[in-house]
Image 1 (cartoon, one colour):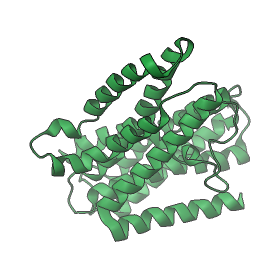
Image 2 (cartoon, one colour; image 1 turned 90 degrees about the vertical axis):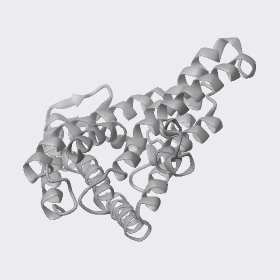
Image 3 (cartoon, one colour; image 1 turned 90 degrees about the horizontal axis):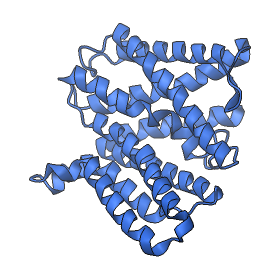
Length: 281
């Protein structure tokens, strides 16, 4: 528990310092780095399953998908399609489909294509919505970045609230075959914690957030985001069980790997982007 608390404070220090000193560029690169390292750990688990994905090229395309929303409008101002993740996913399908014909054996070609594309779709494609949130317009220059902070805080504090509530009140198992330690009482505590964190940040940083993100609205939006954070964690547990591994990695003391860190953001990022986009228009 001590290592987990230390790592949590250290990670939040890195996030806040990166945003404060490096602004949007630093935040974009930090999120992209987390996404690519998460994708790397995912492919490592796929290798443990006996599959052979195109991990290097997959991670290269993952980095492009993460950075394209920020850099493509600057580098290719007359070609908005270059900023579209769909464009790069299409490139991935074509390249991987060609490669499986000559680089894999007949018995694993379909699995290679499926797992490589799933890793690209499930991690960088989903997490690139955090980059898009950072670029949203708002009442201040920091609005987009602080919306990203809001999303991260709401998603990750759900895990903290669920852990503490589960330890104190947990009796009824939520999903004993997937994650035996998770309880319904813990999940409820996690959702309530997220709602409180979301409302608190909306009140504290109201001058930077869209007018529609009042504390009440923030608490209500935090509820489905927290639920998806729990689902994201369960999905990662399914993948880890399939790979017969306890942690995705050992990068972060007390937490595990990058996948263990970013798992709750994978499903929440698109929902956050959708909600914030509606408020920003």
